[in-house]
Amino acid sequence: MMAFTRFVRPAMVALAMVMATGAVAQKAAPPAPAAAPATKPDQPATLTLNDGYVLGIGDIVEVAVLGREEFHPRVQVQTDGTIQLPLLHSVKAADLTVLQLRDSVRDLLKTGGYYTDPVVSVVVATFASRYVTVLGEVAQPGLLPVDRAYRISEILARVGGARATGDDEVQLRRANGDEMKLQVSDIASGGPDKDPFVNPGDKIFIAAAQVFYIYGQVSSPGSFRIERGMTYRMALARGGGLTARGSEKRIKVFRGGQQIKKIDLSGKVQGGDTIVIGERFF
Image 1: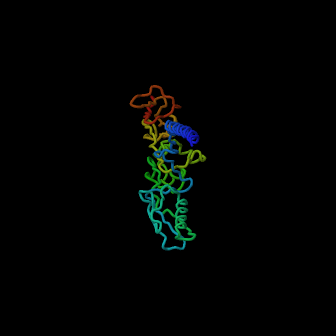
Image 2: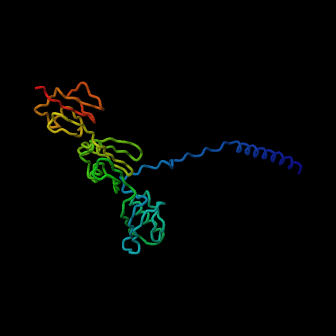
Image 3: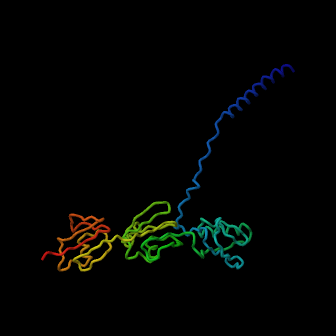
């Protein structure tokens, strides 16, 4: 018995020392660093319509099950991003494409045991949440709902095109802050790289065209828009040309209230220039 006690007591002491060492090590071990979030919640992905219309708050949809008259509601996407449907009650709809919502409703009806193999259709009755803003010198400026991916030429066509008083340049400001400047002529005749797609939240702006003023001995004095690359010689032609008493040697140009001392007819006209054509001496 004494031999057994002599054997057990050292073993128990050793076990206690091992347990104590492990506890100290466990206590001293630094906590594992928290995993960084995969995405930042304040930086949502940019929505595009390349994969179909993306539903949002305010849109009105018609959801129907083929052959089931009791399931054919016309509902609006609520501020919490859901729609209210028979049997299913609240169903997430915002930020889903029409096809994704269709598949979601179908799965919920099937897994809930309401229908064995429902054929579901979703149609957008009113587009309200996705739009682009078109401003400036266009026939019908304002908010334009977009139900699919449109190129900028299609958007301009839907608002009646640019006015005659509009500039040759179109400014496209993306929802994320990126900006592009495009020429109307390039949009009309160029390839896809000159006619990009627009996304919900984009802004399109056409400024008023810059003008010049021409007076004196020209056939048609007045103010005219400046065409791209217009020279003073072209401006004279736009004013109808010189009268019988006009002289190219007696041309004055005023810019910002100051007279330009030396005029080269091949020089470029700038916005606000005033061109005065004087009379010849004889």
